[in-house]
Length: 472
Image: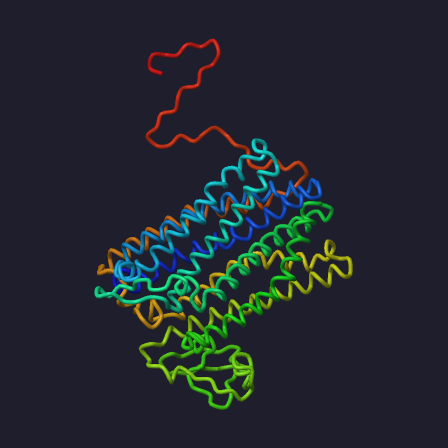
C-alpha cells in the first residue's frame, strides 16, 4: 500500500515519525537532569535523606531515557543523507557547523560527566559528584540551544549568502545563531521540557500517594512537581504568546493556518475555538468563534486588521487542518496544566495537598500531557512551515533525494517495526521503575561487570587455586 504513495510524502512521514519518537526523550531528559541537580543540591544543603533517595530513584529512569534519546537522535542524521540529500547539500555549510557545535559542546560535556553521575557517587565524593550532575544538566541545555538554533534558522533564515552552486553559506554567524525566532523558541522549548518533567514526576508522586499518603518520597516529589507546575505554567503561556507574536511578524502564513483564517479581516478577526477546516473550499465549517478576539490577542486591539490565507498564493499554504488542530491540542493541554497548578496551590493553602484524592487522580491523568503537548507543538511548528524546509527560500519538494517510493516505503516500515519494538520495551521498563514505590535507602544504580564490546574477548577470571585450561 505504501509503495503507491508519493516518495516525497513517504520521506516526510518517515522523518516526522522518527522526530516525534525522538523529541519526547530530550524533552524529558532536559527537565529531569535539572531536577536531579536540584535534588542532589538540596541533599548537600540540608542533609535530608529523602532528597538523595529521590535522586537515586529518578537517576535510573534518567539513564534509560537519556540512552533512548541518543539512539533515536542518531537515526535522524542519517536521513539527511538518504532521504534529504539535496537539503543537506544546500544547507550543509550553515547547519553542518551548528550541528558540530552541539556535539563538541553539549554532547561531549554530557558524555564526559555522565559516567561519573551514574556510577561515581562512592568514588569521587558527593561534592564532585554534584559537579558532574550539574555538568550533565548544563550539557542538556547546550544541546537544546544548538538544535533549536538550527531549527530556528530554518524557520527565520538570516545571516547567510547563496554561492554559485546554490548553497546557503554563512555571512554572519551571530545573525545565523541568534536569528529572529531563536530566543522565543529556546525559552518556549526549555519551559516545555520543565513542564513535561514536572507532570511526569507529579503523576508518579500522585500514584504513590493514592497508595500510601504517608510515603515521604511520594509527598516530596509531588510537592516539588506542583510548585514547578504552578510557577512554570503561567510563564509558558506568556512565553507562548510572545512566540506567537514573533511568528506573526516573521511567518504570518503559519499563524493564519493556526487561527484558521482563510479570509482576511479588515475590521477585527474572530478567534475560532473549534471547527472543521476545509482547505479546498477555503473555509472553516461549523466554526465556533469569539468575535474580534484573535485581533485582540495578536494585535492587542479589537478592530485591528488581520490578513488571511486569501492574501497568500495557494501553493504556499501549509496543510491547514493539521496545523489548526495540533495548535489547539497544545493550547488546550497548556490550559489544563495551568488549572492543575492552580488547584495544587489551592490544596496547599487548605493543607490538603497530600489528602486530596481528586487532585492526585487529575495529576496522574496529566502525566503524559507534556509529551503530547511537545509533539503537538512540534507539529504546529514544522507543518506550519510547509511547503518550505528553509522558510521562503527552499521548498520541501526541492529538498528530497531522487528516490523511488518503494525504497522509502521499505525503510519507513522497518523504522516503525523497530522503533515500536525497541523503544516500546524501553518505555515499558521505565513505567515498571515508576510503578515501584520510592523508599528510604533507595539503592540507585549499581555498577556491574564491564560489558564486553563486540569482537573483544575478555580476559578470563581466575579463581584462587584453579589452573587455567589450555583452551582458556
